[in-house]
Image (cartoon, rainbow, N blue to C red; front, side, top):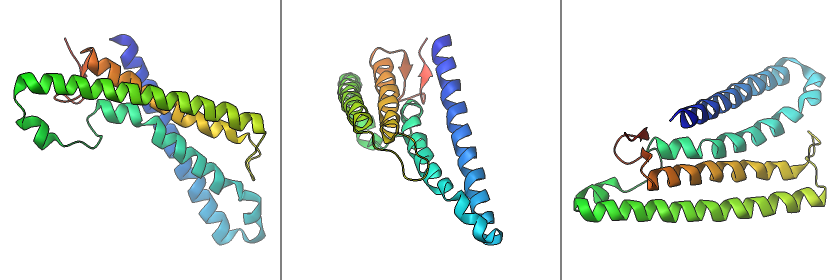
Length: 166
């Protein structure tokens, strides 16, 4: 499925870009603190930026991690269940995961709008703190999408690490 491949590519590029930016910024911050003297106070915003990027990194990886079979699960127990029962159990797990993800998307949206309405801003970056809540909103949205794709048999996240079926 071409759209799913494009989504995977966008997610990977986003995650790698965020991670590399975090590494560069944090390394620069350490060097400036070590050798920059009073110049270090001008770059105090880097620590807050790296923390916020870390939040986007973690939530942004939820969907890919589920698709690749990297989420925690008790596969020893799952693999011992008879085939017919396992099939229905896995569908049930996908359905519950999808419903929970959609619930968290709803909560994330409510938090995003609430915090944006308060006008709260980050201390050093001076950006609206409500945008921080976009990370779980998007992350759980992508997670819910992967649960739905697994439920409908588009991907098989249990045996082929997220490969498309068919």
